[in-house]
Structures are given as C-alpha cells and as structure tokens.
Image (cartoon, rainbow, N blue to C red):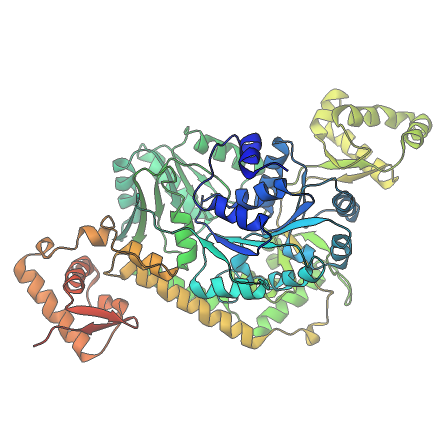
Length: 634
C-alpha cells in the first residue's frame, strides 16, 4: 500500500502536506471518525482523497454543490483517477451504469448529492460496494443550528448501518461550537474527534468603513491596494453597475453572476485567474472551488446576512500569506435591508402551500407521482405563469427545500451527451436499413470515443461542420435516433434543476414542521444580529470573528478598530464628551454595542468606536453577556 506522502507526490506533485492535513489523513487510515474544520482554501479535499487512494475500495463523497462535484471529478480524472458524480438531471440509465461500475470496483470516488443517497436504488447498490471511506462535505448542512440546514443530510447517518466498519470524515470551512457538537452527534461518531485549524489569518486585515457613498469609497480602495480583488454585491444588477462604474473610472474590472452563459462565466473566470482582469465584481455565485492565492482585496459593498458567509468570502483574500484586506462598506441601510429580507425569508404557511400547489401544476405532476423526477426550472417563467411575486416565491421554494419536499440546484452547465444503446451488429444492421442516417451515425462515433460503454459529450455544431450541413438538420436526426432506441441523447442543460424528493401530495395534505420552521427563523435572526454587531462593534474585528467560531485570541493589531485604539485619535475634549455620553447611556440601562451606536448620529459613530475601544482597553467598560457594563468606580 502506498503511503500518504507517496500518493501526494504521485498525483499532486507536492512534497509536504499543509498544516493538519497529515493528522486528519492518519486518523482516517486508523479507521476513526473525524470532523475536519479547515478555513476556505485550507485543502479539505486532499484530506479524503489521499487516504482513499491509500486504501482498497471506493470513497463515497456526499456534497450538496453540483458545481464543486463536477470540478472535483474533472480534476481527479485529469490525474487519471476514476471518479464519477450522480446528481439531478441525469437519466436513470446513466445513474444505473455509474452505480454498477462502483459496485464492481471500476470507480475510486463516487460523488452524490445527499438527496440521491436517500434513494432505495442507491442504498441497494451501496450494499454491494466495498466502501473504504464516507466523506461528508459541507457538513454544517446537517445542523439546524447552522446557516445552511438541509434535511437530507440528517439521513446520511442511516447509511452507516449498511457500512458499519467504514469511517466517516466530515468536512466544513465554517462551524460554530454548537454546530461542531451537532455534526458529530448527527453523523453518529463513535467518539468525538475534531481537527480544527485556527481560523486566525494574521496577514488579513479586517476593515469596516461606515460609508454612504460606497462607489466612491470602493474606487478609492481599489486604487490604493494594487493587485487582484473581488467585490461582492447583493444582486446581479449591482455587479454590472459597479463594474461599469469602475471601468468608467479607469479600473480594469468585469462582472460575474449565475445568470451568464457557461461560455461567459468560463471566460470571465479564466481572465480573472490569470490576471487579465484584476477586479471581479460578483454575487456569491463566484469563488466556490477557485484557488487563487494572490487576491489582495475582498470588498463587500453589502453586509451578508450571517458571519459564516462573510468569513468564508472574506477568507478568499491573501491565501498566499501576504498582506491582504477584507473590507466591508457599511451603512444603516444595510441593517434595514437585512431586517426586511428576514421577514421575506419566512412567508406564511398558506403562501408556501400555494407555491407547492403551483409547482405541481407547472410540471403537470399527478398527486402520488413525481418522486425524484427532475425538471429544468425557470423561476421567472413560473412566477409569470401563476402571477406570483418572485422574491416571496423564492423564499417559499427554499422553505420547501428545507422541509425536504424538493431540491433546487444552482444553475449548472451540462453539455450534450449520448450513449449507444444497441450492440455493434444491431447498429450496423440499422445503418444498412436507414442509409440517410448512416453519415450522422458515423460522424457521432468518429467524434466521440467510448459511446458503447458510457455517455460521452458531443458538440452538435462539430457534427454539422463535419457533414457540411446545419444544426437545424443534425438535431432532428439525433433526436430520431433517440426515439428509435438506437442512442440515448441528452441535450445541453444550463438551468437550475428542481427535483421532487417526495411524491406529490394534495395541497390540503401538505404540511411543514412549524416548530422547526420557527426555530430556523429564530436562529437566522440571531445570525443577522451578530452580522450587524460585527459591522458596528468597537471590539477587534478579528477577535470578534474568531470568538463567533469558538476560538479565543488576542487583539489582532491590524483591523480598523485596533489601529484606532488610542485616545490620541480624538482630542482630549472630544474624548471626554464622548466618554460622558457613553457613561450616561450605559449606566441608565445595560445596552448592546449596536444600541449604543444607534444612539449617535451616523457621522459621529467612527469617533464613538474609537472612544469605546479605548474605554474597553482600559477596563472602564466591559462586555458581559453581550451587554455593555460601566466598571469605573466613581
């Protein structure tokens, strides 16, 4: 059996592991369950890929993100490692083929969505597989205490009965202490075993700038900090508007969001990675799985709804260890926007029921049918058909997903593909009897290898060029071959995929877990309040973030709060005035930092931060149970 270092060198070309990777791998090889908490860019995939290659058998990888599954499978195949992924939108025939190959040892890594793992088809095949490791990516999704709870994750532990001797490796980049405990309990760890790399990023300076004119401030930041950068904005329109503003002001930038075509997304991403376009303005659809170490600046022009999302996105800066900046441009409107969004995110039950009924009608599903059927889903067209509000409808769909009724993937590009369903002799006989189709069959086989064994991608335009004809003539011919049962043809997809994870029920019998629904609302509100507190705190930014994830640390000395932590930043008279007003507010009633900030005008809040920071450093003010307390004796 090859050693982990030999595997690392052979397939990845590295001589050494990153911190904690080797410890995690050793634990897995010893047969232990483990939870790996590694920050963004910490090399989580190596932690299950290397030990799996050291062992006999197959590694089962559970992940909710199709784009990441596809990227990892493609990267493994480039290294000549057999890997496959099963996700929504695939035909039964292809799923069956992949599961067969896995059962007979033809695959080393099998990636599955958590929804697929719950199906009887998959579970029956798992019984026949020699599974050496069960890897659960984005493991925070298993916890209702977390920020991205997904009910199918709760059923992963049921698989352990089928593979009782197989260790589980859970991986995540962000988890609070209570989520860390919950992950291990929900996955039925035989004993607690957590590997946690410090989330501290000493090279990353966290900065929050109270700012009403965000465009001008953004321009100023990007002119001062040279190099590659990412600017996160809340919606697609903003990405385009901000990129245009930067370009007009001589900053080379582009925009990116999930609504672009696959070719556009690919070319923009490539231009940014190689440095042709230094600044990418994007939604949170950008950055997943991208390992670009030299990002000097990440700027958020809107406050994310929770610190998990902010920490993960900000953490894309400075992975090479060099000085970098994570900047949040904050205004009071951000707070109001998050509060409005919270209300919109939890619509009344009758609205959720209405959307569920409309989905059944839209896809023409009969009651009792539809379990694990997948459809292309255009939410704009759906809302137009049923005269529904898009924002409220999207919230209803997310609730339906959290309740386990449906699954909605991100927009994923799946190229056209086909597989020959008949033997070579039968195909030859068909060609003799259908001479008009003979050229296209020969062209398909000439441009695609392996079509008798599995699905292979095809480019219809290339087929048309080879035959010196047009797509309009090629596509009907391919479809005819499909209808005749000669091939199975899957056209290109580039839309989100909606899967009914349960059979459709009559809307009158539709229910949701109200207690769970209310719990998620309460937890989301608390996460929102923590995000707002981060933006308005007078404490060290890094210290506050690390505390949120259960890590104690000294002040960083590099965030905007630490750099302003001197009384000299204010004149003596100004400091005394602020001190008096702060004392009056705190002594009158124990208040939070946010409530204190709100008692001052927006233009005075930066000075309040400086004064409060000094008072806390000197022990005059303390934070107890998230409330400010005046400690100075009269």
